Image 1 (cartoon, one colour):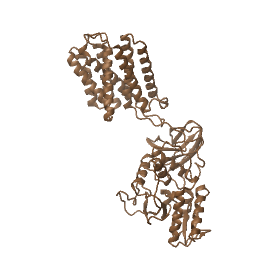
Image 2 (tube, helix red, strand yellow; image 1 turned 90 degrees about the horizontal axis):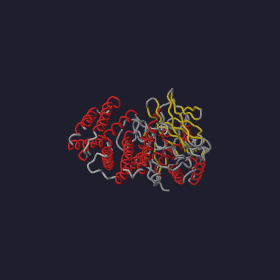
Image 3 (cartoon, one colour; image 1 turned 90 degrees about the vertical axis):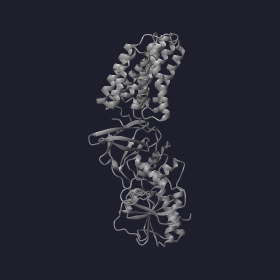
Image 4 (cartoon, one colour; image 1 turned 45 degrees about the horizontal axis):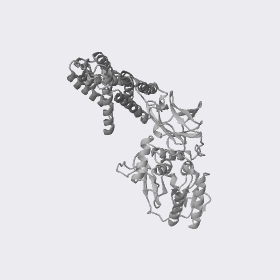
Amino acid sequence: MHATVSDVDTIALVLRLVLLSSTAVVAGVGLLRPFVDVPARWVSGVAAALAVTAGLVSIPLSAADPAFAIGHAVVVAAAPFLLRRPTAAAYLGLATTALLIAETAAGHSSFQFLVDTVYTAAAVVWLGIAVHIGRTRSGLRLGSAALTAAVALALAGLAQPALSGLLDRRLFGSGQGLALLLIAVSTVAVAGIAVLLRRNVRNVFRFGAVGVAAAFLLWGALPAIPQPHELPVPGIARVVHAQLDGQKLPVLVSPHRPGPNLVHFPASAGKGITVEVGGRVVPAMARTGAEGTWAAVDLPQGRSDLRIGRGDETDSVEVDTGAEPGPAGVTGPDGPECASAALGGVVAGSRAPLAACPADALTAADEAALRSLVDFLASNTAPAITLVADDSPRSRRAAEVVREQAGVRNVPISPGPQEEGALVVVSGWAPAVDELTRPGRHYIYGVHLAPWLLHAPVVNSVASSTVPLRFDPRDQRSLSYGLALAGAFGGEAPSVAGFESWLASRGMAPRGPVSIYAAAQVDVMKMTMPGMSHGGSSVGTWNPKGTIVAVSAPLSP
């Protein structure tokens, strides 16, 4: 099963189309009965037989509601017998039209319900006129008006599925899609023939009826087809679901460019997942400092498929990387943080391509936060700072900033681990966890992390730590991002990189003075009050297995 093709029950869809189209004919014949001399009994009888059969068969085959299906069958079956009584036939036609409206407009908003009502009623009347052409008392001189109405109904029927995203290349891989595409093409062709033959009213109705019926089929099919997945866009991280073991697993492909990419699965997806590209199978493995599992793959230019597997089950995910290269280092040590930034933008609905990774440069805001952190340590008389950095451009510049500010405040930078002082970590996620989990290291003046290291796998690798932040991880905005991320991607924990992307997509940024926040592992009691994040695992919070609280007033810049 392809992850980018909607799941459609073919039998249910066919039964629905037969039921709606035949019922529309029955309703139209009944509504127009008072205006004709000779009733179209055989047309009504055949259509009623089809509608009754489709309705009753749908009970065991597509789990239709028995009461509604049987009631529908009774009403439709009575229509051919009432054609001898024009008034009764018209009332029954009206009731049948109401049934059609209820089925085509089920679950729609008030505006869409109104549109469905008008469209269904117009299609029913038009089909009724088409059946009765030549049987009317007045001769029915409505050729031009009828042609205009037919074209309008056909265009409206085509527009609805087209605007919903159904009539595009996502349908080419499914039989249902090809069938709908054929109906759409037929609608256009028949409407065109009716226009060409507009001088003959019988031809207008003969061909127009086929076009209107086809358009009505498209209109009625839409509620039975789930909304398709969005098409992949080069440069925008791909977030879709693959179905394995009867479950839909979130999949992130970042940066979704030709060449190196990371394919990420949340921790809730479990283990043992593989990713296959071009015949090369790569197992998704855990990465230090990051949640879930990750597979580094090389993607070709343009459209291709990823095969996601576990055991004997596989599924495919469609990608379209385009031709432009992505940022450098997306599969390196800082790749998960870069993917987290991309994921934050996607969750917020951003359509902006990922241009750079957070580790590519130190932002002015983070530089100021690090200077405030050094000032905070100096004011607490820390005798020395042990500094841990890595080779990324951000980390190298951050280390320079810490050294500069430490020099201004006369706090020495220790050439090696000095447990009598403070530990300051300005590396990426993975080196930070490696340092924090070294055995036998205890710093009297605490462990202090750069702002971008506020991520659950990092802060929970040590009993307690502090982070200089310009936002409160417990406020409404921060928690809204955490909940949106967790809901969209299998319970994924927040990250500062993702939060900043999420805010940027809304034209915002984490502004305000820097405060020092302490993160600690706490498991005393479970608390579910709003804003409380300690005790047990709390999805969407910044430290799901602990607590994070401010331990300083806002610091001067």
